[in-house]
Length: 151
Image (tube, rainbow, N blue to C red; front, side):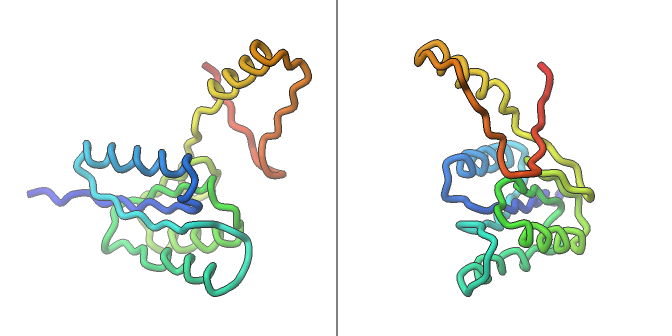
């Protein structure tokens, strides 16, 4: 009998709706493919210290190649670059294939959520329903690289 593949999902800020939808989607697809998923998650992600923050971050020390075959890092949802750097080192030490969602890393492939249709619908709504003509779009933190996929 073939061993079931085991995927580690690394995520932060799971209390928001966006992350919940992603985790539900991962769970449903993994069941359909016959994979097991181990979720290594923390409730929030801040760039700070303290017992609660350190306790939350300790979950990531449990990731090892004896229990997983691959990693899905939901990197775009971490607020702390310091924590992301720690996780990066941990993942490299584990040495399994890794895919990162919504964040560029030099050691693994990255994929991005397709936001263009949603932004287009919101912009159309603001113009057509509310008559807005002067619209400003903020794309995230300084240095955040916007990703556009031509359709």
